[in-house]
Length: 109
Length: 114
Image 1 (tube, chains in turn yellow, green):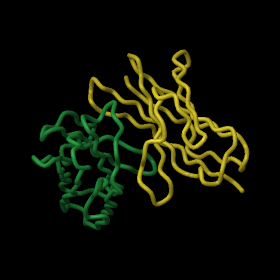
Image 2 (cartoon, each protein chain N blue to C red; image 1 turned 90 degrees about the horizontal axis):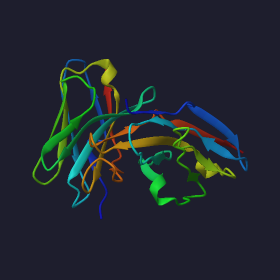
Image 3 (spheres, chains in turn orange, yellow; image 1 turned 60 degrees about the vertical axis):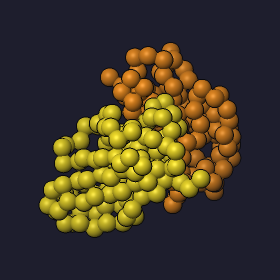
């Protein structure tokens, strides 16, 4: 069954410390995963997708097929990174996207 | 381009009533998806419409229904409201389909059922 798991509901990190938001997936095929972010009082928006292999706002995410993971990382957290982060798994055969339950990232000053 | 718009932004209803939410996608986008967002369950997929056809549906009861018009605008209807239906309902549009394309989200409609 297709599934996305974000094990942490809340992650608190000090400013300047490294950040890692965990995402594990279950998918019978070659996955294309996304990270979406929702800042306070803003719309949910795409942060990055693994096929583009880009760094957005200092965040990167590497698809690890062996561990079925797509963790989101940033070496040095900034206060403006505080937001809700969702890992998303597109399922083209079903034409839908499965979202994880989200992790709230709280950057401590 | 104007973003995805949703109306109304806030709604308070009583148990047993029904409600209709509206979504206008980005111009040129033919796919509209609906999601229910709650603190406990995160984002849950309701359904996706493309060119007026419902292509997929999530695991929600039949009280949740939707439709899409020829101009790609979409409506979602919830009948016989229950307290548990209180949530933020998000609509998202994309050019060709829900997956694997980037979705653009609206601000949401906050539904409170009392």
